[in-house]
Image 1 (cartoon, rainbow, N blue to C red):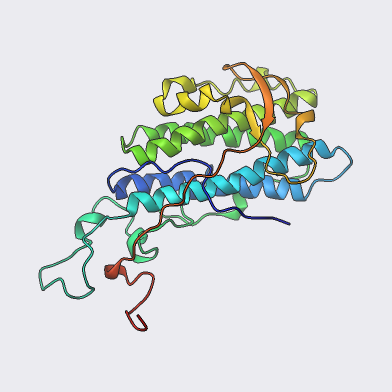
Image 2: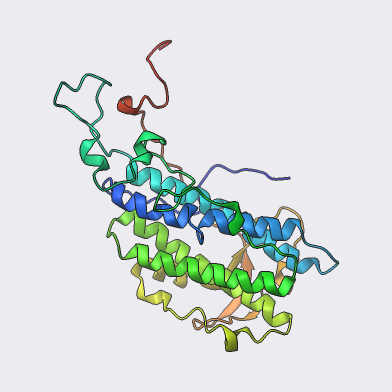
Length: 285
């Protein structure tokens, strides 16, 4: 069973509305290598796990639990980037020549306004729906772990590209956190492969990027988040049997299992009359 605690895994840094940034950040949410994919892939791998070596199941389940929080963080970041985009006025009262959302959608995903009422969608940056066929959970532990390393490596590669597309602080704060956490998850799956006798680094010289080059990442590196696995379990876990010892990545250091961060506030987004959200009328007020 699962429990919920109100709060985000990282802060939402306030900045100006940026629908174009929200559009590209959708790739990190609903793209082939986005957070929805990682969440579902580790969920299915852990739920379908067979055998007595449950430390591997616990590792997969532990990363899955964090990925739920990542999905929530990216959704909220997209919502923040869309918040305030377009003039807020009574619907239909803009005059013959008025179009309050016109400027907002010129460089945006129009579905953010048509379908989502200025909020996140389960799609990639091109507007294509998230696809469950991307989930790799084939039952062979080594193959699954190898695919997970590729998934995390490609996901962080795409995040570094999205980082270069906008200087918006809201976007970059979230990406900085996720880049570091993706690094930690690469370490987790790479370490699991090592315990299974796979010399993965000879086949896969990844990660091959320096997270210290990104200013928003440095504070999380200083906090040790690149070498930490958050434990969201309320009952005992065997994650520490795998996630321990020297980091397998270029950033080095000791791996450790720690408590998750204290939750950060969830922004409260205002109503938007132009998009009839959340209600259609003022009836009953």
